[in-house]
Length: 131
Image (tube, rainbow, N blue to C red; front, side, top):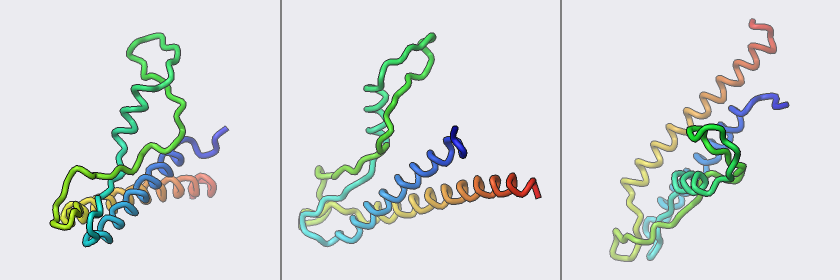
């Protein structure tokens, strides 16, 4: 029996993703002047598409049912963008893009924290009998 349901696990995984993305972006910004440094990114969509295509077949009584997958690993991965060069020294870190991504990721992370706090406040309210 799950005490907290799956919402906490989804929020935890999402916060792990946002944390990894924040580390990757700050690493890119720190290496903006490093010769031949190639920027990295954390991707989710490729992993999701791969899992959907390679998911385990389960018995479905209707073709419209969503296939079931038993994958429980990380739902994201870090990839290196080695196809571009923005600077004369072989570096491909675009500071405008990195700062924009950092701001978006911080907003996303803060929204997750707010949602998690809301879940804890609900539990606290239940434990206090609604007072």
